[in-house]
Image 1: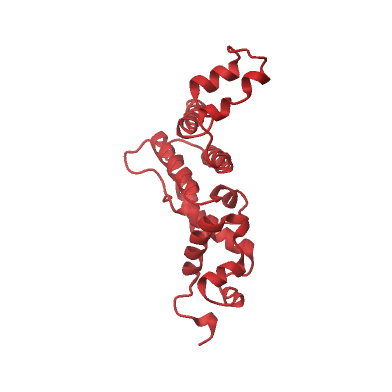
Image 2: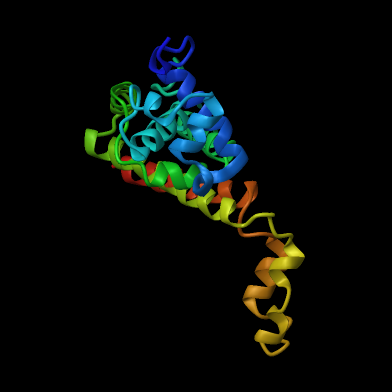
Length: 214
């Protein structure tokens, strides 16, 4: 039997295996050859399903984006609650995969299914009084915020403790214990993590509410 017709070697199997391998070797270690070895086939067998590594990465990005579930607000759910839930789930999906934010940030295209789901989400916001432009800008702003935030989180590995953020700063600030940066880090903790993410998300939603109010 030809390798390209190997039972179980489907596009979905390929993507699932690539996601698992990504968590083991990271983006820089993920190659078509490595994926083929993991699947027990020759590299040419994969080209029945993907043409380039970028296409593979786009498929992985699409799977990460879709994993939290996409769609408009639930019946009776406010757009603020929906957007908060959506942003949190999206961030967790990025964090669930090594280099997840890098892959999504560099994706060159998303699937028809994802585009249709996005359109449904925009329709849900329009039903709450958003213009299509404001709906798209709102979802884009929240998505870009979450992607950038996780990119910073995934770069900081292992995560630094508050003490690590403070290390060396007193000397740089002439030993001024009341320096705003020292006070902020001492009292507020790490500038990344759940609390910092939630603060930024609240600002985005509050700003959107103010824009929508008139």
